[in-house]
Length: 105
Image (tube, rainbow, N blue to C red; front, top):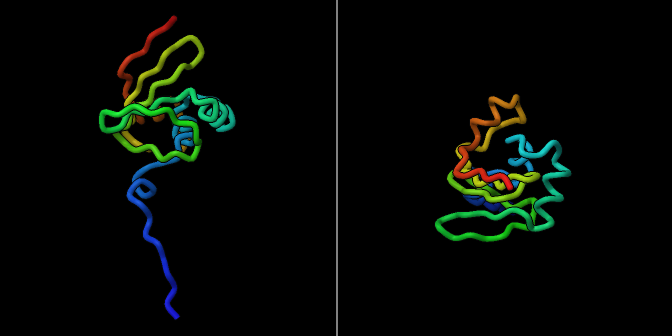
């Protein structure tokens, strides 16, 4: 009998869960805080010129995606450059994204 296997979708092989990426990029101190922020609908994703609110921590983000969210009193608008492989030092985390716009209240 043949075993059915489903190939991974392109998003899963090239991307990473949003909560993990935000934690790796050091925007949040813990995955729990990252997950809570996402579940409250406080993250916006821009992909292919369309913007949508993300409310699921398991949403897969890809390089070239843009994220818009508040972090304290600062509005962050960033573009994802790389997924990364670990939560490394701050210098390594800063190589995962580029800032499009940062505004403070």
